[in-house]
Length: 273
Image (cartoon, rainbow, N blue to C red):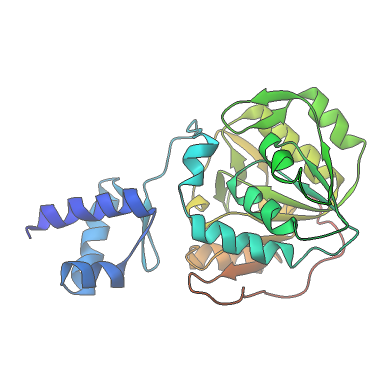
């Protein structure tokens, strides 16, 4: 295989799988890991991939990129299921849980459906429908429907949230830049997310590793406003280290069938914004 053919094949594998790993690519193309690393560096320098520790992720989307829920459901499914399983281990019967809209929080909703005594607050129509057959109490915020995300936004959603209190918020994001903060492409969605953070005792960002290093149009909050991050083990090590130094707890789920790897105990007081 010619060099350019191999690099085009790497880009195509990244498009299909959502990420590529150096070791796996070396085996696939029967070449050395040194060669694959050089390929990834060249592809990164030309903007075709985003180089990460041990592999590469898709090149950063634009700040206005706003894929539909159905498009997002096709990406990183295994990681989202495992993030969901790790998230529910933070939840106890009798608590009030806020679920933001998104595919990762939908995975959390499915994992929570086995509980018997929870109150779920959400602005996601699909999550409310997902839990309709469970024994859980579900509060839907109301508001204006965003068809891309099946979420409810606007002043009605914000006012409803400010009348409530919750034990824990699981917040999905489109971008997580450790220097800039958590972000989403929709301004109204960001305002609802901030209202959720205002009324939750513990704020947990849930996102797969592809969200790191990305910035969407509207910032939700700086990293200091959250207590914990649940992600997968491919999150950039430098970002994870920086978050830990800032006192934010990290849980990284493995890509293999293993338990989540928690870091520290669950906080009991909300971190200031």
